[in-house]
Amino acid sequence: MTRKLLLGLLFLLGAKMAGQERNSHFSLGFNYGFGSEFNNRNYTFTNHFYKLQIYYKLKETKHFQYQILVQPEINFGKHQLLNFYFVKPETPNYQQKRDEYTQLKDVREYVLNCGFLIRKPIDKVCSFYILGSIGPMITDTETERMSKGFAFADVLALGFTTRYHEFRFDIRPSVRHVSNAGLGSSNAGYNTKNIEFGISYQL
Image (cartoon, rainbow, N blue to C red; front, top):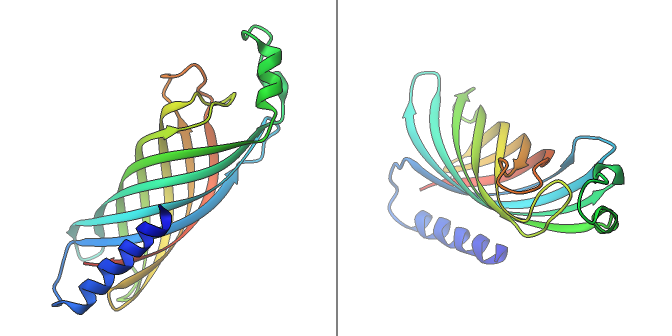
């Protein structure tokens, strides 16, 4: 699936470069990132992810540029409960759940984040930006911290980009919180620090 997305993106970029040049408010890109939980004694969580990036420029002023960003994402995580006392004795079948949750688990998340980005150009080539995004997601694995199924992912990021013709190369440190807003029985969620690398092209 990831390979098909990347091949599709490269095809679109190639077709655009071969066609007539024009100014567009849209950019299309692809990001890869990875991260882990903030250090704690209760659990471990590591992840890597792939994102399709769809940018739309809302407005540009003398000093700033404002963009909307839509990000379909697939996230591959590994999670393990370290502190089995996190599952309390009043929990039904608590001993069985302690045994289950302390095993290393693969967690897959399917996310559709929507964000707002404020960009500050440094010169004609480089820029900094801040990005906030939120979106629905589906997780395929139940853990002591998250019920299986519907949840939300919130991301706050800072980024730096450099341009070469119509291409933009991106590095983006971020923090991410995932929870289900109380819609499931377990809602402690995950908090991770991540870094992403990406490329985009103005259509």
